Structures are given as C-alpha cells and as structure tokens.
Length: 288
Ligand code: PRP
Ligand code: ZN
Image 1 (cartoon, rainbow, N blue to C red):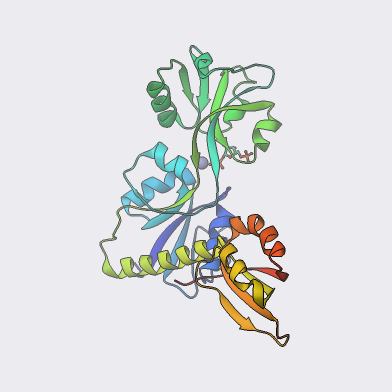
Image 2 (image 1 turned 90 degrees about the vertical axis):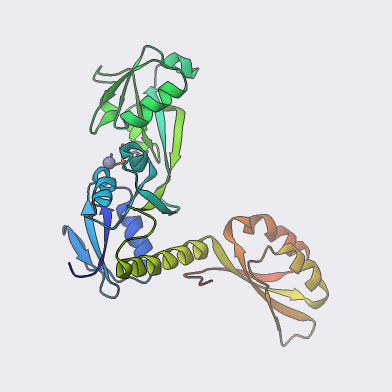
C-alpha cells in the first residue's frame, strides 16, 4: 500500500488510448505504460492497473482497484452493484442484433425460435424477457461475429462501434438493445479511506472540467459597435462575453465561451449581423 488511488483501465482495446488521453488532459503525467501491468502517475498519487475490461467491475467491487474506467455495457452485464460516478463521453457504442447480410430481420418478433450468440447473455436474456421474445442464447467469450458463418448461431448480439467488425464478417446491424459509453466506476459513491477519497474528488473535479472544456469552444470575432446588442443575443455564452475596444473606433472585439455543438447553427447569424474575423479555438481546460 503506497497510499495511491488505484485505477483499473482496459489493457488493450477501444477504451485504452482514450482513457489515457483523458488522464493526460487532467494534467497527469503517466509513465510509459507499454506492456506493463501497473504504472504510476509522476505528478499525482495514482496507480493504473491494466486489466481485461470484463474483469474491471469485479476488481473494483472487490477493492483490488478503487475505481475503474469501463464501458457501461460491461458494467450492466456484470451487475456487481458498483456505482457509476461519471459518464466520460467517449467509447460510444451500441449493443445490437446483427444478422448475416443475405437474411432479413424485419420485426423484432422474427427473433423468436432463433439462436443468438453473444458475450452479453445477462443483458440479452433480460431484453428477451422484457419484450416477450423466445430465443436460444449461446454465450461466447469472444469472436461472436463468426458464429453465424460457422453455423453455430442464426444471429449475434454484440457491441457495434464503427461497424467495421460487422462489415468484415458480412453481417448487418439490426435492432438496438442499448447505447453505451465509457464511465468512471467505483465500489461506492464515497471511498472509505478519507485520503483516497480526497484524491478521487480531485481527479473527478479535473475530469469534469476537461469534459466541459471539450464541449466548449472559445469564440473571438470583430463586430461593428452598432451591432453589438444584436450579436450578444445570438451567442449562447456560458458566461457573459468579454467586449474589448479596438483601434478602429466603430469596431469591437467580442470573446465568449460557447457550447461547441451550437457553433455551426449560429455562425451564419453572426455573419449576417456583421461579425467578421471569426475565430474558434479549442479549450484545454475550463475550471468552474
Ligand atoms: C467490441 C465488439 C467488436 C468490436 C466492434 O469489442 O465485440 O469486436 O468492439 O467495434 P467496431 O464496430 O468498431 O468494429 P470490445 O471493444 O468490447 O472488445 P473486447 O470484446 O475485446 O472486450
Ligand atoms: Zn471485453
């Protein structure tokens, strides 16, 4: 025990890089992690344990790790009674039914009597029950997408992210069971050890400010003085915008933090209102 907070991460997979990127944005300097099972942050009391994603909820539940980053899909499948502290906004994917390209799945009722291969038997059985469907579930630990071509199953129920895996296996996606993204997981909302809880709260604050920063952009533009009022009405600013005077007397500079997803909707309105030299910058961090 070195007093560090222990974080479990997926050893190799869709979430690994993105998780480390998030920790970097949180200001953590992580040792070169390649091929090592445990690494520490140089400037933060955190140890990272690299594990199979399917094992993470259990390790967190048992206290091997204090917290973990894993897909909601794994959390729900394992049902360990762990707490989701924060949705992380990356690693988005869906649990979906997929069928061999040549066949058709028109209604969800067509699943009745079929054989479905999956690595998510618990979620799938629950879904079938809730929807009054009757199908045979075959549990596999991996490579589910080859089951139909091997004649082991009629269809599969698996995670789809880009859809490449399905395409390569001549499968097409059908009905969706649920959407998932990466989450931060803990055995309970508040860790028992006060020191560890302090570290966790520090990390959570950082993660939240990185999340806000990434969904925001810094907008800078020049506006004619007499359009200022109209322009300010267009900007859905997070805080009140900064208005600065310019050498040119009839012009002003306006700076504001705006939600990134709204930008393209308002840019035309801003131009129409006379804004020029519009600059949009990424924000690394936004401490609130
Ligand atoms: C899922 C799924 C596919 C792949 C789909 O695996 O089992 O193999 O992702 O992604 P794509 O649509 O982008 O091709 P997961 O990331 O959960 O890894 P694991 O099964 O090895 O744990
Ligand atoms: Zn997995």
